Length: 143
Image (cartoon, rainbow, N blue to C red; front, side, top):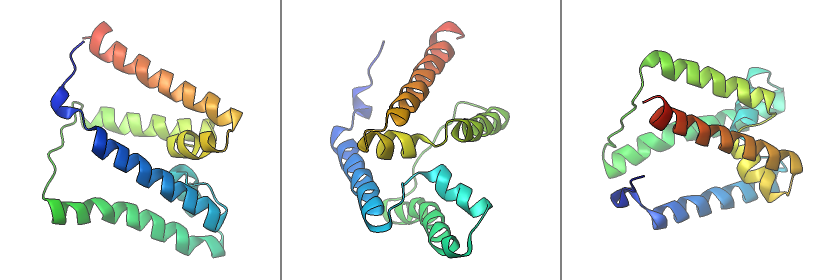
């Protein structure tokens, strides 16, 4: 196994984790809702009148944040080692998994674990284990 130390970013990772934790805690304290992306977006697909504005604002903020970052810090080089077909299939599988698991990684992994939810612990262990297995198979077993 090779560790690329140039990609080891503990301080920026810590700062990002702290910002995510504070945002999740503030969201549940101020609004009484879980900061799970699949639930927020899912609520837009079957909207209730009182929920549309904050959900839409949240999603627009998520879409605008990388654009603002790009304007301030410059473009970020991204590389995806997969074709569009694989990316689309992966996205559909993630979407199906969030429905089947009653939530996404942010809902279970950040908010659910913070609330000591046993269901979120099982869900987080399942998607982390599946991620580890997928990376191992893709990088070592298949090629």
